[in-house]
Length: 210
Image (cartoon, rainbow, N blue to C red; front, side, top):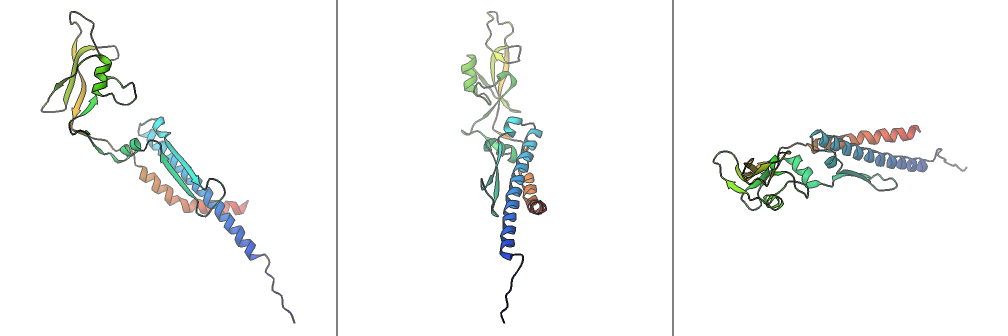
């Protein structure tokens, strides 16, 4: 007597199909988690009033780039990590040379290179000399004698009589500045991580229902 055992359906084929479904579910979940975190960080940055340009520095990518894998991963990062990190941690900023931090007033205007203008650049641009004024209480000052134009910026005066010339504060001098913490990126990252198992299950079930 011969006995033949046949298993229908094929368990090996079923397991292979289930592994493939799992790989598809994991890569889909990681892509969704990465995209969601990128969107959450961008929303948080614009909501803090830091502008869309800085928000758009947030990028995301999933790995592997093609195909599926149970070890799929997502990466979310910023192309401006120093600026983002400063607003996320609220660090204490000190002068590199141990003296003063020069904070430009509206009368200083903006740098032609972007960002904050420095005292040296301001003097070269305007042709005016800055004068130091020490104050026991409150920040010390760098001031200049000139006139204020229609935009409220200090410029050289062409008046021969001195009419309209004022002593304008151009920079506030402080030993250090505590940057306000305006972001909480870890909060959104933790939410994204906590949501990954649910995304995997949802994508797995959805794949089986198709």
